[in-house]
View: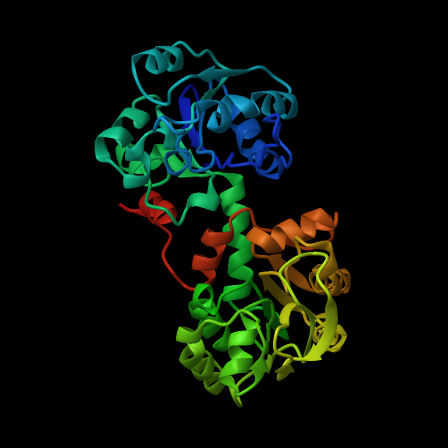
Length: 402
């Protein structure tokens, strides 16, 4: 955006303000708002510029009220105005719709230095459909367009992708957060410093197959943890008790194991903290992952796995972490994830580049207060996952199109 013709313009900025709210509708984690501030503040520093912010919040059309209407109170972006105003240090105006005559009138009356936040774009079904007319109406509010919403760049939605078609190349571009996200991913996808270790966790193999296959082509060490590990152990002939297994992915797991053989160091957790039920206060024990007792399920990696994984991570120079090692939302099964986070921080302290790939991994790092002790924490779990898989992101492609 520093190379664009933006002086004196009303600038539409797609941000990702999809932040968590408590029962009183107060923001509980303002990271995504904070990450957008450098872009907003830079634009406001230009002569004659006013800023119009667009975002979604949650999935209001998937969680309608009993009468079939949108829960406006719960999903309104009005709820983040106090936090945004405080962080920006200035008043933020609000439009009760993201399109329409009233909103257009407010937008066109803005003076230099003013900031307007539009209502949730997902209050309109046309947003997620990438509707051309809806995109045109959004575009009519501004004279330039900046996409700084990396977290939604993998969606071909109206406000994140299609809208760019209505702006010339000299008045459409990316914000600073988008630049940081892409630069961080590129450090791992283009000639990363060796040894390069990918730590892939989470519940399901099906969610990470493409990433696992891609990593086999580029990493030195591939650590697999979380619920997805038990599908691999079953594929190897192990007894995993009641642990999560994707029966339809056993062949995929075998193929990944075979592909990795002789090429990289693939590490599965040797042991687990197992439980007799999926609850924090369940009866627990430690078990070898090839022989988990019937009636027990693995909910976290065990001490042997932690020790082995920690050694590999702390010797690494490039690290990608995507997905927790266990059910870290339950305190009794968070130890594995916490210990891996500490290992990543230690490696970073020794000069490694560490990228936390958004989603649950980011939540884990943030909950431990270690966000500033790793190289970069992505704001977009799904977008970062697709980028690392080698996919083209629509929100990026559309701006770069001729």
